[in-house]
Each structure stands twice: as C-alpha cells, then as structure tokens.
Image (tube, rainbow, N blue to C red; front, top):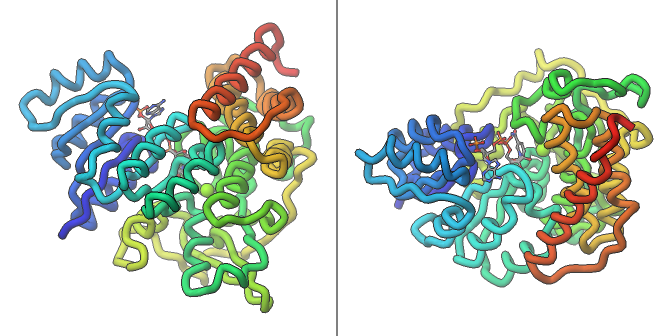
Amino acid sequence: MKKTVSILGSTGSIGTQSLTVCRKMGYRVAALSAHSNWKLLEQQIREFSPRFAVLTDPDAAELLKEAVKDTSTAVLCGMDGILEVVSHTEQDTVINALMGVAGLLPTVKAIEAGNNVALANKETLVAGGKLVTELVKKKGVLLTPIDSEHSAIFQCLQGNERKSVKRLIITASGGPFYGKSREELKGIKKEQALKHPNWSMGAKITIDSSTLMNKGLEFIEAMWLFSMPPEKIDIVVHPQSIIHSMVEYEDGSVMAQMGAPDMMIPIQYALTWPHRYDSPAKRLDLLTCGELTFKKPDMQTFTCLADCIEAAKRGGLYPCVVNGANEEAVSLFLQDKIGYLDLFTAVHQALDHFQLGDYSTVEQVLEADRKARAFVRELFSQNGEQ
Ligand code: NDP
Ligand code: MG
C-alpha cells in the first residue's frame, strides 16, 4: 500500500521539498499545515487533495476556507488544528518541518498517537529531547532525521554496532562569516546574514547557520537522536558541505556520508529507510567539486556554539533556554530591533542568568522557553547593539 504522510510546515523550505519527494514517490498526503501562507497552501491542496489543511494564523485560515470551499479539504485553525491532525492515525508518518519550539507539542502528540515522525524541526529535540526519545521508545515508533548531518550519521550507523562507535563528527559549513573577527561581525545586517553559501533555507535557520548556533543546536540534536554523551561528539568546519557528517568507530574506521548539498536526499531517506530509490537530487561529481577542506571551529568568536555545548553538558532545561533565547533574539534581529552581535549576547547571557533543573513534562519545557524569551526581550528593551 502507498505510504501516507502529513506535512507540518508544508509551505517552508523543507515542507516544499518534502512535497517534491511525495510527488515523485507517489505518496498520499493526509494533512498539510502552514502559518499564514494560504495562497501557497491552496495550490498544494489543489495538487495533493489532503483531508485536512491547517493554518495557525486565524485570518489566513478564513481566507483559505473561502478559497478551497469547492474542494473536499477541511480547513482547521491554530495549534489545536495541528494537534488534531497529528493525532489521527491515517498517516504512517508526520513530517515535522515547523520552525522553532512550536514543533515540540506536535511531535509529542504525533508519537503519542503511534505515528512515525520524520523530523526536520531540530528545536523539538533541543528543548525536549528527553521527553521525545522516551516516548519514541515507549510507543515503538520511528523517529528519522531530516537534518542533513543527522541523516548522514544515521546512514553511517547502518549495519554497525552502536557500542563500537567512538565518536560522531558533525561537519559545519561555517556559514558566510567564518574567519571573521568579532570586530568584523559588528554591524552585519540581516541581508548579509541571510545569504548562506551552500544551502537555501528558511530565514531562522539561515541566521543560525551564520552564528554557528545551528551547529550548537545540531550538537544537542545528535546527543538525543543517537544517545551520545557530549564528549563523544566533535564539530569540524568543512566549508564545501560535501561530507555531511561522519562516524568514527573503535577500530579507527571513519564512515562519511557524501553528496551534493541537496535536502531532497535526507528528506527522501527519512521516508524510505531502510530502502533507497532514485531521487531528483543533484548528483555529486568528485572531479568538479573541488578540494575538500577541514578546520577547527572558532568558538571564541562564534560563542553560540560553545554556549550550546555548555548547555548540553549541564543538561536539564539549559538546552531549552539557550534555544528559546536564540529564537527570540533571531526574531528581534529579523525585525531590525537588535544588532548582529546581540544574537551572541542573548544566548550567552541567558545561559549565565538561569539556575535550572531537570524536566519531566512538556509544560515545564514550554515554561522555560517562555522565560528565556522574556529574558531576552527585557535584555534589549532599552539597549541597541551591545
Ligand atoms: P521555513 O521558515 O522555510 O518554513 C517554516 C514552515 O513552518 C512554514 O510552512 C511556515 O508557514 C510554518 N511556521 C512558521 N512558524 C510557525 C508557527 N509558529 N506555527 C506553525 N507553523 C509555523 O523553515 P525551514 O523549512 O527552513 O525549516 C523548518 C525546520 O527544519 C526548522 O526547524 C529548521 O531548523 C529545520 N531544518 C531546515 C533545513 C533547511 O534546509 N531549510 C535543514 C535542516 C533542518 P508560513 O510559510 O505560512 O510562514
Ligand atoms: Mg543541518
């Protein structure tokens, strides 16, 4: 029988590429969701005929309802709508391509309902990794990574014993500003930070890539996905983004997954594992891709990475707080309300400010996230770039 998927965040960078994979694989689509982009969602509804479509923006939901009233798709509104569709069991897999910690509750509800989750939304694992991974075990569902580095590690682990893994090596492109000093980063505008050298992605992750916060989030994501302690994970800057990550084994072998930087590969693998099929992705040509180089990450300048690793070592709610602080700071930066260096300040000060324990409920995680955001808003309520 054909696979049935639902896609949260179907109008975004990962969401639209997921639909390309679904089109190519001939999958059925049970539900689609977006925040406010009802026009694109309408086009997607007309092509894929999902049973449900959800918009979290109520005004946009009204416009969509009117626009698709001639179809059989029911339009739902708000986070409640998302939670309703992920709780249905007609889909085999929920693709979570939402942006930010807003993805946590939908991931939890999807797993609780017994659905597999293909996860792009790394913030889910950063903020609530303990809850999510415990639930995955309890429910016996699959949680497959879409993030390219984690897909690479997942692929390098196939057919090998977990106990013989010595360390995970996550590669980082370094983003557009790698090699610059703190002084040179001052005054960077969002238009500059939104230009990633190798990948075309949503705004938030593109900013995170430029500060290396993205790599910090991925460090924590890897800990949860692969049950690895922080001391067994290394980060290497590899500006060409050809090797997507590696696994070193006890015997000295290092397995690397390579490919053109194209998210279609990890998205498809997350849905077809353990099988592989032809893909519309670009092909890697080793004779023309140029030299592959590797460097140590500069954590003195790009402190977000060091702060995430520190939060990972402290554990409990610390990763949630650095993530929440960063989400708020990126949102302020994208609204031109704070400067580029403030992104680093927000994460660093949030890590310093809070005394945090562990968590056992989603509500505790979301409360810590709210506090971290409020802290950042307060921090910049009077100041400009610090
Ligand atoms: P985009 O910003 O391109 O898309 C986000 C999607 O989520 C859109 O459909 C958007 O709807 C919707 N959305 C945004 N905010 C909310 C909200 N508060 N509630 C409900 N829906 C919301 O993001 P990306 O596709 O780039 O990234 C999605 C996730 O995947 C992130 O966690 C990112 O870190 C991760 N990821 C992305 C990669 C990439 O290549 N892009 C690579 C690896 C991981 P609307 O269009 O209406 O605003
Ligand atoms: Mg990644």
